[in-house]
Image 1 (spheres, rainbow, N blue to C red):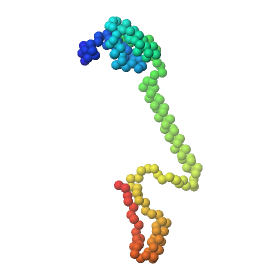
Image 2: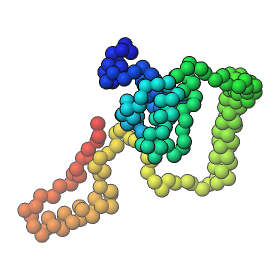
Image 3: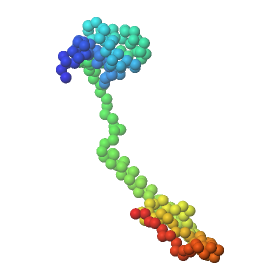
Image 4: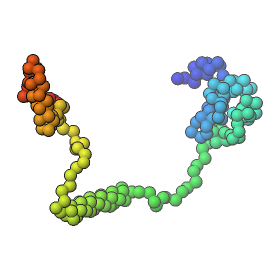
Length: 194
């Protein structure tokens, strides 16, 4: 975009007013005043008289709509220096941080953690072996079926032997009472999943 086209699209405001809009809007140096978005700020700045950037920011801060919302008393000093006059304040020199992790320190920490994990796994295996050897002669049975997925599991389980014997007995007695019912000695075949 060309700056002249942007200014024309915004209703013919001056370049300084556009700079003031950039100063009071959310940027890298400060946030906008809570409750005053770009549209509201644009309306306030458009009605201000042209002048110096710092004077227009002061006029903006003196507007009644801004005074009500500016509870934190934001002054936009750093943004005025940067956007209005191109001045940046240098950060004070800081001493190099000795606590930062270098690649070698990270590798060392990783190797220590890896060694601790392998030692823990060995200790768990030894603990499992000692508990099994302590309970020799005692058979450990599972109370719950395995949670592992079996692709070839039986969907319809065949009836148990006790239940099958009871059904055969009922069929025999029922067959004696009414000969019209056929007796079947074959049980239904179980279905398998694919």
